[in-house]
Amino acid sequence: MANVLTRIGDWVNERAPNLAPTYRKHMTEYFAPKNFNLWYYFGSLALLVLVNQIVTGIFLTMNYKTSALEAFNSVEYIMRDVEWGWLIRYMHSTGASLFFVVVFLHMFRGIMYGSFKRPRELVWILGMLIFLVLMAEAFMGYVLPWGNMSFWGAKVIISLFGTIPYIGNSLVEWIMGDFLPADATLNRFFALHVIALPLVLLLLVVLHLAALHEVGSNNPDGVDVKHGPKGNRWNPEKPKDSIPFHPYYTVKDLVGVGFFLTIAAFIIFFAPTFGGWFLEHDNFTPANNLVTPSHIKPSWYFTPFYAILRMIPSYFGTAIWGVIGMFGAILLLALLPWIDKGEVRSVRYRGLGFRIALGVLVFSFLALGLVGAGVTAEVIPEWFPGADVTTWENAFGRLMVLGYFGFFVFVWIYTRFGFEKTKPVPERVTLHD
Image (cartoon, rainbow, N blue to C red; front, side):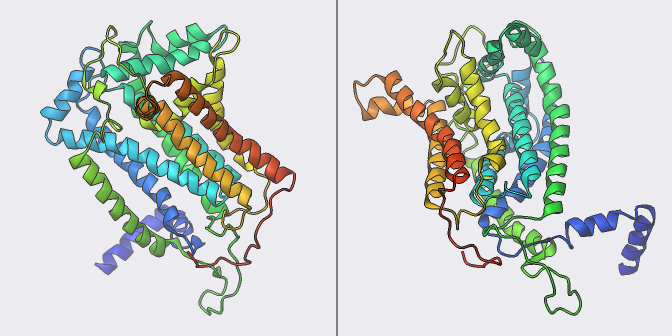
């Protein structure tokens, strides 16, 4: 068997001589810092969920029909009559939410440990492009089941483009292909969701990983890995503070994969709707343009940005300021490498002001998610009987918007004018928790 595998390897290497060096460059000879902690699981988990979404999506397309009359019934057919169709559908819907869970945590780790700083700006920018494409992919996939919330969610989100001066109304009709979401909308969303956006997403993921492996991975200390002789006569140029990605981190990632799959399986088998967070109750009824859901809201992973859209008032008779604020919230994240002028990367050694600001950012983001999901509107009457819900919700929501955008303003001033007092940074990576 060993001789057979050797011959196969020689045959492949003769015809594709760059294949083996490429594998070694990105796996066995790619040295990663040896002090990775649990925050570094989420990058590999995002790749795992991406594979799950592609595989389950292929099987779902085999029975889905892109017609306003048949789309909802085709999903019901998958759930009730296709062998294991319910499992595939729940794996896909749960995977969509878990995708954003791991991506948000992956992004938070990048901000916390300064992975966006020089020389990894391109890695961060490519990651933000992945995030944007992922949001577009998730939105179009959310529309395809053609439940009532899908219909009204599509109408509300696409109508946002109507706030653009001069071309807004024409742009809305062009995107929908009709005056209301209908067959044309489903057909083009299906094409984009199944073919175009996955191709773009895969390309960006490859570029993201390639850019990362060119500059090397960051670590919890945020210091560069030291290179040079280690006293190993077989490999004297091996980096001092790192280990080969394969087999060490590939095996370590299997632990995270096992834990993650256990949680995912529990959700799929016991709570696939997750109390209406992963699959809204209104989406289990067919789309009806004459019946508006009591609370139109997007999926939970869009609710922080949706809250920003809602909380920014309309000025000069147009709602475009909320749209600018919503997209600006994402743009500011992409510009973080140039906003943060601090020399220290990791939060372990940064000043107290940055730590507090990061906590405010996280709290504001989570609170905006609750505002966008309508949770605050339900809680306020219980906590403050007789209070004006709209007034209190707007006051709280706008305070959280200030907290979110205030993080970027504060960090720029805090680091640009030298107010940050940092702790001494170690010369080499450490192994403390």
